[in-house]
Length: 128
Image 1 (cartoon, rainbow, N blue to C red):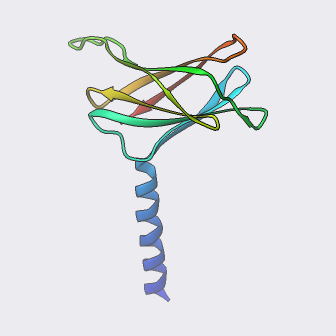
Image 2 (cartoon, rainbow, N blue to C red):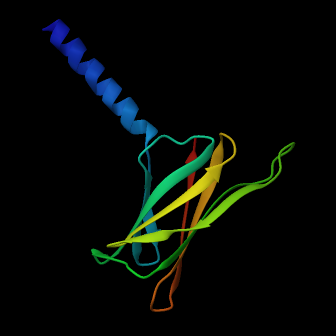
C-alpha cells in the first residue's frame, strides 16, 4: 500500500511539474474573454503563443490582434520589447510569436481591434 501511494504521489508530482512549465493566462479585454497560452515552456528567444478570443461564448473572428511583451528599464538594464501582429487561424484562434531576450518578469499587452471598430486591451504578465 505504501509503495502504491509513493508511486501515485510521484506520478502526480511529475505531471504537475510538466504542466506548470506550460504558459496559460486568462482574462478579459472589455467584453472579450481572452486566453493566451503556449504549449511549451518559456525560453530565451522566440516563443509561440495561441490567443483565443470569445464573446458571449462565441468565437471573435476578423479581429486584428497586436501582441507586445516588454520589460521596463531597471538599473543597469535597458527597456526590452518584442511586438508582433497575430495571424488568425479561424474560429477565434490567433497565433503569434514573441521574443523574450532574458529570464525575468515580462508585461503582456494584447491590443484587439474588432470588426465593429471597438478597441480592447488585455493586460497580464509572465515570469520565466
